[in-house]
Amino acid sequence: MEKTKIAHTKSPLKPTYTRRPGQSLDEKISTIKFKQMRWILIPALFYVLVITEFINYYWKMPRQQIQILAIILGILLIFSYISIRRLQKERTKLEQGRDGEREVAEYLDNLTRKGCYVFHDVITLGKFNIDHVIVSKYGVFALETKTYSKPSTGEAVINFDGQSVSFTGKYPNTRFTRPIQQAISNAKWLRNKVRETADGKFVVVTAIVVFLGWFVPKEQIKNGNDIWVLNPNWLESTITQLPQTLSDDEVQIIANAIRPLTQVIRTSN
Image (tube, rainbow, N blue to C red; front, top):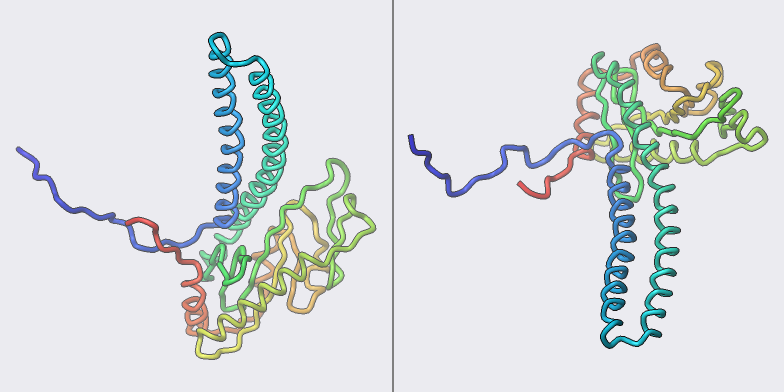
């Protein structure tokens, strides 16, 4: 039986899709890969030029010109090596962060099965994103995932005093406020955004900083005002032990307000 060719076709996929965990970091990693490839190709192309000119030397090219090209190639190779090493360090850091967000997303799967709405990589109008957002009858939570490297030996403990964190065994005498401030800013932005799009409804958004692989004493988790610091193992139990503050209708309204922030238009269809 002869097949009939269809003149016009289109993709069967939906015009939009939901952002996946760590997608923002994936996009940055792709940019770094492109830069690394560029620093590989530029010396390679120049190397081909030098070899070509070296061959021509046997016919008409002055020896001094070959030497100049060889020196330029050497400098270019050194500069490329340094640039690739620098980009690789940045890429490794981003990949660790991306994998951390994906690991936290796995912990959040249990909350989804309990009726919570979980959104990943919520994009804001600025240059930042919110790693995960949980909308549930227990409240709304904005999560910031941190994948700081642990000391190779000894304890890996984080102490939280409500305003800053300290890392036992890594920076024992230093307190850091940036992770806390970042999470609070994310929660504040999300609260205002929900208020804009959910009929002016005021919603308390709790900021959570999740430290993968680090131990946070249970009694310190809620030391902050509307901000928690914890290991992902404590996420589900800490949230589900809270009193129910939102009705099913309110949860649905808030989830509908956040969902568009996670939608991406396909570049081709």
